[in-house]
Length: 523
Image (tube, rainbow, N blue to C red; front, side):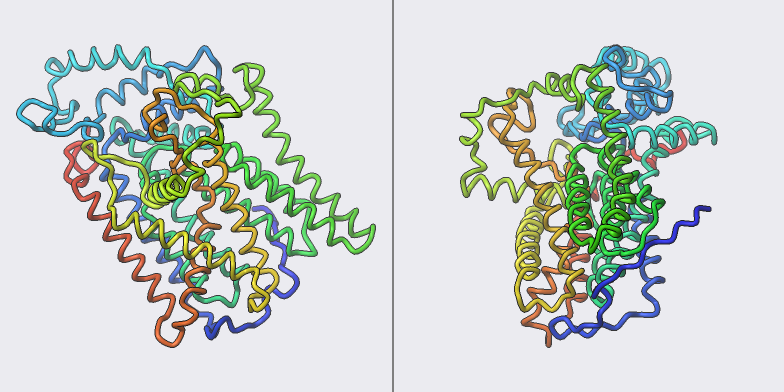
């Protein structure tokens, strides 16, 4: 086991305070409560994973094929972008038509039973036709950043070594998400306890909201799953490094590693690199003399090198073997996207009030609940989406404004964490705005020329912990005037009940699907 002592935060971060009438009262049972939340999050994730059949509409076939490629030691190359025979066989045998078809699309207006329940002869024609199509299909995810696929590929091989086969092997890959979600809940508590030690509402509310977060990407095979955990760890380590006067080279090493793997999980996690550079300059500016400056440089520069080297190596490899550094040129060609001319960028509807509202409303909907469809209808609730968009805007703005007010009673370190969380939020938001305005989406289904908004919230899931730090802080600010009547934890509990009810109400038809794990796990 590594002897890796975390640095201690210095300054006024632990100063006892009273925030707007809320008296800090750390509970002796907090650790047990958070552990219980981790277990609850794991259980609910298991049930939703098992309820959703394969393969969801968010590119799950391509994601599975890329996992299988990496399980065999694959590295992206233009000559290896077609679907693997093993992936084709699993897709053909266990895919459901329920995501993108309605019952009235079929004979007798009934969804046909799973193919694995047919006799070999009766299923042979369908298998032959579908297999022929998929064997020549292009996998547009094959050139994506490698971290998720490499880890999931190892997980896939472990399942095979344990004798897991058929549909159980597919669900085995999804079940990898369960410990990821549980660890995310625990990490959120560690961060709240470390950086907001006297804020009982944040210490409790942050892990509660993340434990019941209804994002459906966690129920599928998808490389977005790891972003919030890895980004969150890197974010936590960077803040530790900033606030501490005493840290080791080993600590800087691990910080650099997590920054690098966060970026190489999803390129949209690039804000962590900007935050790392920002913290580097702040740390240098705080150096009191040349000796301290040299000591900081000797420890932080290796961190930046460990961040840069893996990213540069991967981008260079892509440039050599794929022709472009990000490895996205072929995917853009497949999706029929192209870069807009400069004079067409500012004619985008997002620069109007109506366009901003559409973008924000749709983005917050997909960020909270995801993008799954069922029988060609979005698994969404209008009332829930309105709540997600309004509450997110009001609470985040309240937290951001409050953190810069001169009468703010938070410590300097707490205000800094809130401000950096807001910066991370803005960087992620501008990423999707940039995606929306820079590209002509051609005749792509989504985004499109008719709907030129990139509003897939899963792409910015890396900001999950910073987002909910702002969300809970903003809620506390809004409730300040009602402090004698309303406890913020009561409101957070009500929010959890509402989002859980909404998730169950829109997904209950999925649980009766004959294609899900509860019905065909023996095949």
